[in-house]
Image (cartoon, rainbow, N blue to C red; front, side):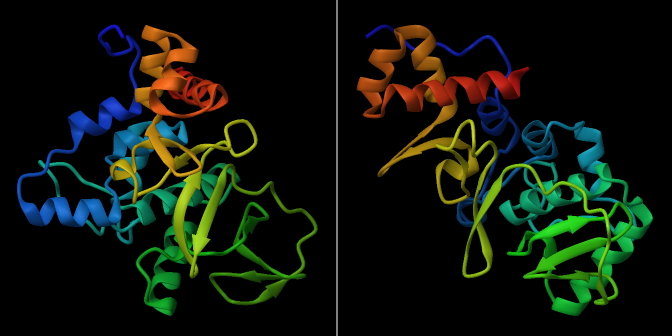
Length: 241
């Protein structure tokens, strides 16, 4: 097999190796348990500007609370922070003002004693003015806890989050097109991976192997299907675009 080389395009996995450096055993334990994402990595996954993600961490109150220590001089978001950033981006895009959303986030953190209330198992929707949760056939305003009946509800969040015991376990960014791609803090420090049966391989690794050695050899070498390799290649191409 020929020597592996890096793809010429920018990849999120490359960002993850170069941007998050840890210096002590306690850092490794904490980051391994919770996953760690810089604002640049979150921006790539959500397809937004890194400066926008950074702005969500500032202000009084901030839209997202950082719950990891600064790593190598950079702000790091936990996996819960990533999931919440996904929800924040959706609500802002759908028209909720930053000021109103910041007020809602502060109120929800206090009410539930939870630093990341939007990272829990809630079916979020919006009418463009309020943060709403769909509970069966009822709709509740998460700021006021009032039950509402809005006529127009915006589309739901993109991607799919799998929850275990009410907490986010992993994110599937493109569940319809690439159902094997996951962002899972329990695997590869949160790097995007292909999960097929009991095998989990970083998407960047599979895509690089496919480019250098070919699709069939990459699949044989890592013990996954050619379809899994195709999904890894497609994912890497999408986030590099």
